[in-house]
Length: 541
Image 1 (cartoon, rainbow, N blue to C red):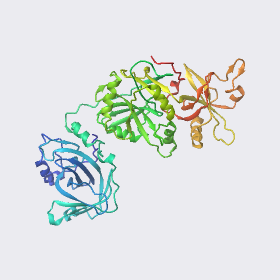
Image 2: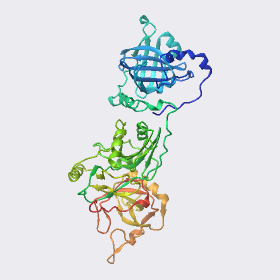
Image 3: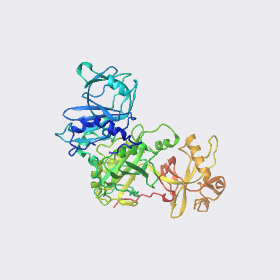
Image 4: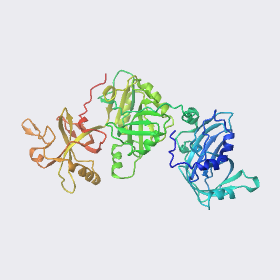
């Protein structure tokens, strides 16, 4: 669990003045057998609230308010009301230390309050009355809660005829939005469920017994070899081929880095993925997967990923994880794929969105390919079940079979615009063979006005006088090819070959040019020098 960062300093004079605040709390607990903090009285400046789900002798919720350096606490057997005017019994219990606002764990059976505790919601509150201390003494607290699950007004009212301990928690103001079922059993602090907290027994709270968190380094990803057809022999496991950004997630306690295949840091660009990874039940982990944007039918779309750059509405994202390379001090690279996937499934059992485990598909790969083509998906990836993880290597233990032709290509220039089009007409793209950049064709479709301007603005500072392509102009059988003639070359604008784009096309022609190419987007996760033409081998061994 990732603890709250402390801000400011404690007012030590409060310790002597208010030492009795936690006396009842401490008297009911044997801290040799429990994981909670003994606690200390804090300053009087905070305005936090926390609601903890507590599965003790009976399941209930503990409602706590930071007042006067401690957490004033009420047990609410039936939970928080959501509809205006609805009332729930709230029994005031002993004050708790401020540290308890972050407590999640299992109180041993036989101890006071024995059972599982989860931070159901947390945030800040405003007192809508005169002063929370005076309102508490008067028996009526009117509050505005600003939490991760609860937002709105509630009122705590003491039941005068029932003594000092019995109160009512009343929904005041407007109705509150109910908490979705998928979020109701997830901690607002760690993302864990009650069941997961029970399994883990929350060893993090045992002070002085932690091992150092392993420091993880970037691992160049293993790559798949393009093949023309599925292999006839071997124990192969198949997955869908995604159309997104390959990414390595490195978790070190609460710190998470999300890195592309060339180590570009994606963490700031995809905060929802980083947050979900931080809540996984491991102090250290390295996960290999693909960041994708999903269309209305749940298919990955590289073009949709590009809308993140244009400022358009953010598409639904997914981080499909297909390998686990490290877990809590154990390097898994030399473990067989089946073992790595087994541990991955355990780690992701209750992972929060947008993390998803990439599904392994068994059965006839040819039938699978027919279905992939019918649905318009990109293809499949096959992996030998006993394969180790070969870092940075394009291995034949991993294969990919494409149903749609796509290729990363390097931008080496552009043509002048014609007609009503602005900025440029077509991109001039190629791939490397050794140290030479080879021309592959012109890409003139797949752009809208915003993309045309954005690309033009990025290419303009990289303009150069010399053509970067080794095979232009191109002459075959004594004739200039129809791709670019010397006359046309005089009207081309050349740029330094730094940008990589993703292109979809129908096929390669006999003279190694693209047929019907369509621009999909820029690839910032690829280095230009790494881009080569993908040629499928006929069959994997």
